[in-house]
Amino acid sequence: MTAEDVRTLPVERKIQIMEMIWEDLRERFERSEISPQQKDLLDRRRARVREGMARLLDWDAVKGL
Image (cartoon, rainbow, N blue to C red; front, side):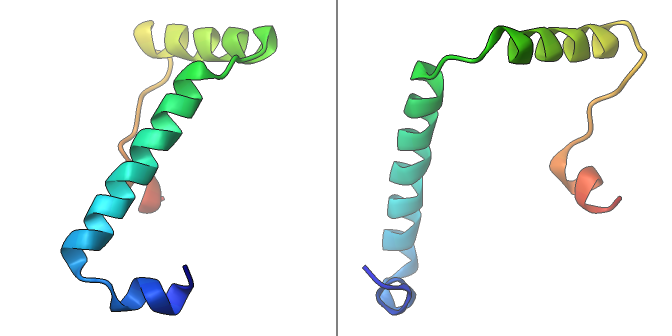
């Protein structure tokens, strides 16, 4: 499928395809292993947020930075 093929699809079909892609990516991510170093980094970041030393930003806030 080319970019031009995608442009000609109805919006509803594009949304269906996007949902299928996201579901596939989510399943692949859930099956993937993270390294001990990555897990440690995520755990430390979660702890910083939990302790009030860092805060989470939503995507709109990040885009505005």
